Length: 161
Image (cartoon, rainbow, N blue to C red):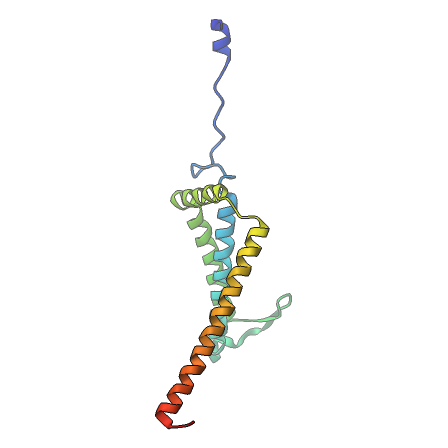
């Protein structure tokens, strides 16, 4: 190689990293799955809070008799509290998920899951069938032993024949 060839060759550049120090596409599936799972938990919690606040008479009364048209819910203090808490939770989850430490954990999790050798459908089916058969047989055996022991106890304690 001549000196001009080595000067013109440049090493490959690393992909552009985002503001958190990682590429946005790294661990995308794991981060998205974590976000939506947490969103479902948050939604369930806020819905439960709303139902609990509805039982308090002053909080359940509609404000100005306004009903939200699309979701058909009365605009009440209980709804506002649950909605504001939900929005704060969404922002908190998004911030938490984008922290470098958490993002690294989710990126590493997705990388490890890609290394897993997932079984074929036939293997999953046959393994599941073995488990189901074993559970049914063990359940039947336990039911027979339970009936036998119950009969023995009735004979001993109550004197029934």
